[in-house]
Length: 144
Image 1 (cartoon, rainbow, N blue to C red):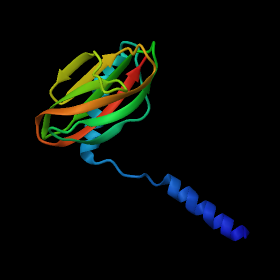
Image 2 (image 1 turned 45 degrees about the vertical axis):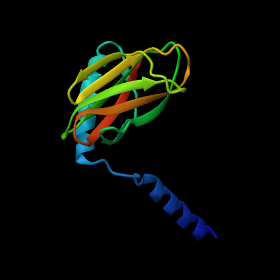
Image 3 (image 1 turned 135 degrees about the vertical axis):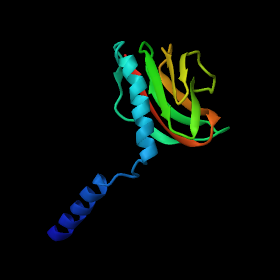
């Protein structure tokens, strides 16, 4: 019995340490681009939240990420993309799907949207391909 428990715990520990999916080189490059952009906001007192979302951004296909935000905080959502994606955009939507008014920054493969929610709750951040072909993206966010 003791041996079975030891084997089970060993398998559990090994399974917990194996990542679900390794990031591609393009996703790593996109994250570097997003972090570079988010660094500008950290100069204004924003803290970069741990964690990030990577994937593929395609033309005419919204990539959505659900986030829980708190009223009274300020947020910047920064995204970076890699070739062949040439220009992306970031948008924020409330829980009903209505686009919220944000400050926007767009510079080719970098884009960001910033705002302060008046209500706490779930919001959705979209990453859209504006120019180019499907490519990797990474989204991170900062708050204060």
